[in-house]
Image (cartoon, rainbow, N blue to C red; front, side, top):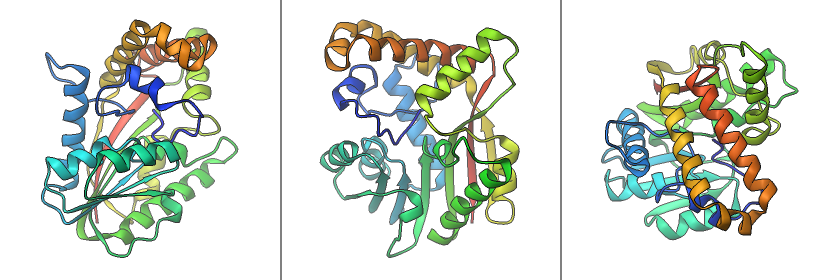
Length: 274
């Protein structure tokens, strides 16, 4: 899901159906988890993979409302965490909740740090690098520029943990095709998720891939839980954003559950090392 919204919808709408951390990306589930448990587990996984525990400086690209920044500082002992977002309201809330954090209203392409980072996290922002009009070669070039920037920001031995929605098996019927279009238009307006091969090609020779996993089976229950929470608060949601927008999100979340369950969409988690 997009960590950089720019959709004009109020934060209170998302607060109805996201968890307390306000994490708008895939959770990492274990038996008996609540949504908040699973989102905290995901944040802890990203932090551990990036080697962020006790680090002096950590960057969160696409920091959203600051839930990851808050946990990096309060739980993982990060000395100084920097978050990037393109949404002014997200930035304001992130600054309120995350002490000892620096939240910048800028994208990765404009980021100019004054010192290197020990670790970088990126969950839910990479999907938005490539526009629909780009060719495969142009997409790979954009991804390579991202990885090259991350390499320049990391100290030697530093790690990047990247989580991104990616292309899965091609839709195998009209319903899957409709689901894919609906999800793309709602969640990735003007953008196209990457393919595994494109990420490999773009990062090759820039960063070393230490680990990759496909957790699409974690995104189906995440979307299902969001849908259940939205339906439970439907009257309040409609009062905030209107019936049509609320219904659009319900349809998109249902479609997303099917796409991830059937593997037509992937959720890739990478660990890279400089």
